[in-house]
Length: 236
Ligand code: 4FM
Image (cartoon, rainbow, N blue to C red; front, side, top):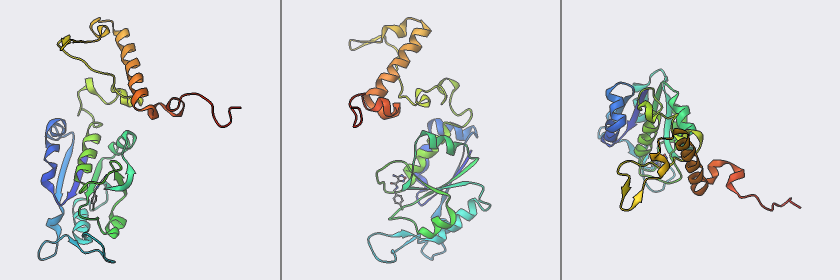
């Protein structure tokens, strides 16, 4: 997959070139191209923002540099174009899987108080939010999206920790993990994990995944499990 990122802060994307995503870039399983929107400004001071029409606090990113940057990196509109913003469709693992299916993504990161609505109307396909909180810009959300979709690209993860293997892909939270030593500060590794009995280990892990999901995120188990059975408005 190829991902274009348009931003005023290209240096913020350094973390993507480390660790698992960094290795994916090195191995050409993932192509990341970070473009500085400012370099497209035709303003004599390379300005990329201006005061909002109608007044109000803060500045708005202007159309021209963003429009020209989008045309430069994706002239034939081959990429799925996404603006990261709290107004967007909320990211979840199903949306990640959907976006991971595109050959190309273009991620636009806003700053200041927002981006002129016309460049979103003209250029973008959709808005995505990484959650109901407000950040100072779209860069961290763009990195979150890149990291999450990278895990779905073939050969980015070791087969042992493939996305199909994780219990989250069955809609459950992960069971607890243990490694050596067998005892640490008086706490022992659960005996079943030392038994070598693979069927019992699989059963224990499934039970643990169900328990932790019921305790912490009953909503993931569906409406039946989310509220215990009992009297309802129509139960007489
Ligand atoms: C701030 C985006 C200014 C655009 C932000 C501008 C966010 C989120 C977010 C901050 N993005 N999910 N939550 N962005 O807070 O995606 Cl112009």
